[in-house]
Amino acid sequence: MRRGSRSPVKGLILADTSIGHARLPHQDRQSKLMARLREGPESDVRQLDEKIQRLVGPDAALEVKRAARGILSQINYPGYYQAAKMLSAADIHEFLPQVSVPSLVICGAQDKITLPETNIGVAMALGTAYQEIPGAGHLVYRERPDAVNQTVVSFFQSDD
Picture 1 (tube, rainbow, N blue to C red):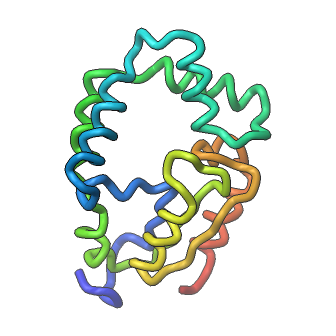
Picture 2 (spheres, rainbow, N blue to C red):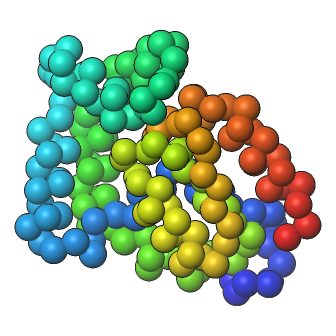
Picture 3 (tube, rainbow, N blue to C red):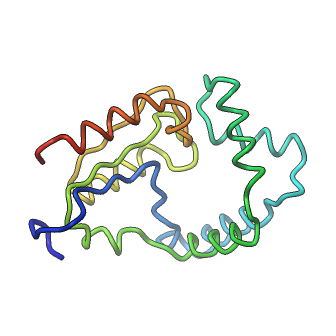
């Protein structure tokens, strides 16, 4: 469907979006993939705490960190490994030209997983708005739910 065509979808929101690693040099792509494949359910407390620190902003509340721990404890690792392999070969830029509805890219200002610069690039490639949420990392929806909700509501209430 081309931009401007009628669609049953009102809009698309991409939050803390990964672009995939297909554009990276082979060695870098393999290095990222192997780092993800080394992660597993047997992570010790230190490794788990490091993962949590990467997921949340530096000022995240204790309940957000607990929620992050809960999220990590529910990972299905065979599925996670498959997703890591798919991410290694993916390139979101192949699909962006197919987006035909109003779009918005959201990112936590302190996201260490999918950097704000990456999300700005996605918004630019889509030719759409970018909204950075201050005081949040990758788990922006848990750290700043009111800001995320207001952004989503405003987007869908707009006439764009």
